[in-house]
Image 1 (tube, rainbow, N blue to C red):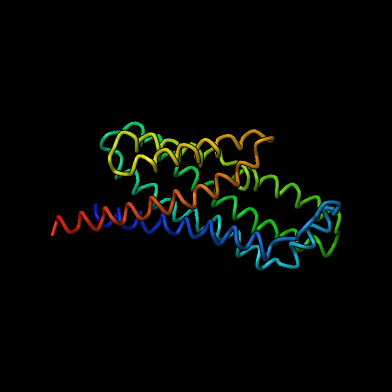
Image 2 (tube, rainbow, N blue to C red):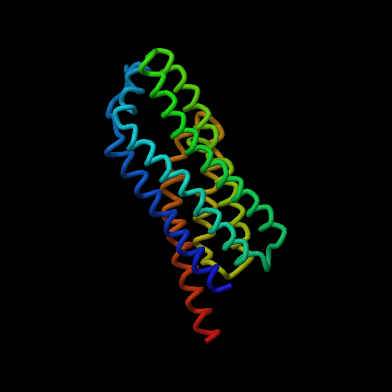
Length: 223
């Protein structure tokens, strides 16, 4: 479907934009500088001073990301299923699971901080302890471990190798990005999450341009 492909292309470009804005905010407005030696209470106070910004940021980079991802995963399934039906069924399942996880991750962080803010006025130490638990849950859902997202990107790339729907170089890029995401499951390799995120900016943007270009071409042929 031409309309679905164009919607998927736009969704991919939105995902790339979300990553860019997310990294920009993290490097500026949400950058606390050198926090070595800070107590958990000090780290929490920094967040509470920027509570509205932090909650908006979480909803943007996680909840919106997950919602848009559903559109993209569906469009990619439609585009790649012809030569890789079984593989794409598995890939799309992981894509939708990832969408659910990142939406849940954003909501846990946003709602959790609201709860902790109320507790903070009563007991700072207890609030800091509660935030450590909430942050760990959020991190496990999708804030730091990119296993499910990495699997989705890797499977999409594997399906791309069997099709001419995307450039072969894009499939190689997706393979590298996907493997980086999968490896974040190992705590010593958690920093690969940055490589996964930066790589996905290029991957999503390339996917988006390709899908929109193909959609326009198909529409012209149909006309």
